[in-house]
Image 1 (spheres, rainbow, N blue to C red):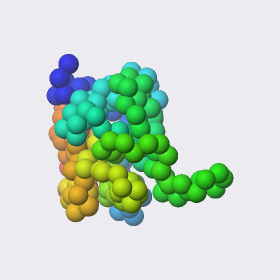
Image 2 (image 1 turned 30 degrees about the vertical axis):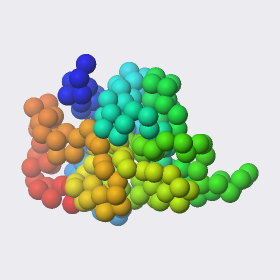
Image 3 (image 1 turned 180 degrees about the vertical axis):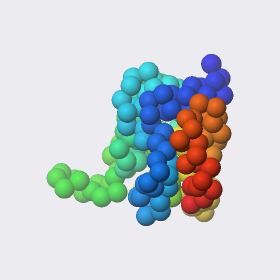
Image 4 (image 1 turned 120 degrees about the horizontal axis):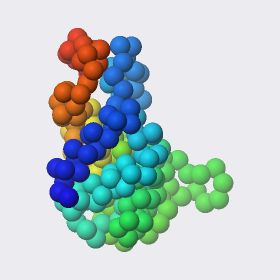
Length: 202
């Protein structure tokens, strides 16, 4: 199965699992911005079929970064789940990068061996800040980070922010691409919300 087929299955899956939320009352994002569209992978990735799907898709996309890379688990809810599946299914090693050291034990930020180029993994990003923080910590230890792989991004500002920190983003789709592909199946109420909020991703 090629990347485009996997991508279509992913987009269909996030809609079927109600991971794509379109609401009249705007969500407040972690960045402080507001949006009528939110992508919540929690229920999606709780289904083993979808978890395997996204692991396959990320694995195929990771060819761009080189197959000998070590996966980087960033400090988010979904990153450890995705990396865990990729590690088991495709024999990838990984390192864990925390924003803050654990309250107990060692005062490390990074756990695991930094032997290859690190491919950072997360489910989505609005600003890129979590990925940038992880890259800085890896680089401070002499490691190399060139790429990050994600499912989705809201707008190009996150991709541009990552690029300013010398991180190339590999993604499945932008929110706009996801909406475009799902437009035939989105219900009338959701379509009206999208159409009446031209700055939906600002």
